[in-house]
Length: 361
Image (cartoon, rainbow, N blue to C red):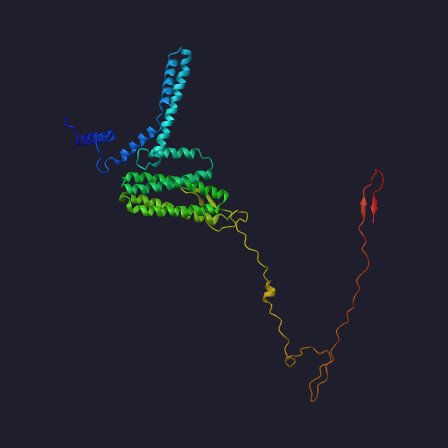
């Protein structure tokens, strides 16, 4: 029965790679360059951690002693099994640490990318401050944008872009939700400004990458940029409500607390409220509207409108009779009283029961 063509090609590639690793053949141009570099790094890592002769002898003696203890009577066999289990756990932890170190530069779609994401989840689990958690989520989201930029340089498959953009949106939503909740509860106009600037920068970075991404992934890039625009709008709306009694509607969406709408009744006790500067008291309306006194008109224009008190005499030829003005009523000045008012009476209760109270005044 014949061998399928794809199987034969894979086997030939495997044999070719084995020859290159053993050094029996020379690679052509960039043939298996990434894989050979990884093998070289692992070899250097193994060479750097190789023990010297004295250490190898000590390990050999230790293993021989443990095997001798394993053959001892049953009463000590449990102790040996526990030691072997502890050694196995230590080996697993060491291998896990090396794997996590190697996955530091893994990109979406790489085999070690899942281990990298697991390490980020572990770091979040060990962070107990809510503000630090929000900052880590935003830091991981920015890392995803950097990884997407690397994917555009390597002509990566479309599925890798989908994975990176999905993880970016997950970290973005989590970070924005936690940060806006803190700002709503504790205030912090500066945090909202920093978040708005960060969202604008990430949107610009994605805008530069979308032209180099596959056509199938460009809709995902557009959706991520729309989400970043929503973040900028959310920070602006929340910032305008921080000085109000009602900041949010009490409900939440994918970006956290939803800002309230309607009139803003300012809260003077808000940490974001700014008191207006002190100004001088404006003049009263009466004094502002009353005109300034004008100068007295000349004597020729003064019209005497005093009402005469004497009998009216019809006008006749010649000089009219003089008008006798009635003198104003006399006023009497009352001298101030010099009488000293009497002090009020003060009553003190009796000091000894049965006696009358003491009155002063």
